[in-house]
Amino acid sequence: MFAIEKNIVPKRKYKPVTFPFQQMEVGDSFVVENEKAACSARSSALHFGMKASAEKIEGGKYRVWRIK
Image 1 (tube, one colour):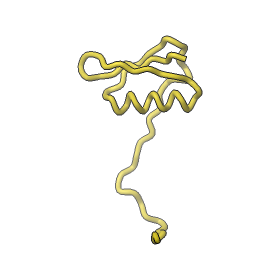
Image 2 (cartoon, helix red, strand yellow):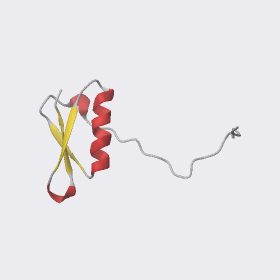
Image 3 (cartoon, rainbow, N blue to C red):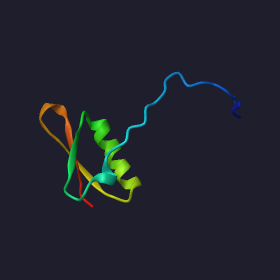
Image 4 (cartoon, rainbow, N blue to C red):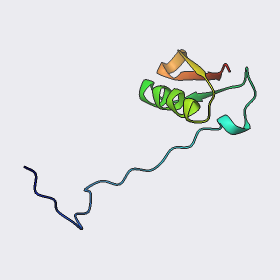
């Protein structure tokens, strides 16, 4: 069994990241800092009923395209 505890504040707060998919057309792209952000962007696109593709570019950054 698990003990349920209330009013426990998380140690770290997460800042939501918003990606510009709603303003993008198919073929548009943007750059993110790392692979984790690229994966997050692709998941975000699915949330809006779109598809995205990411590719590693110079400097360890990733370019994310809206593909559908």
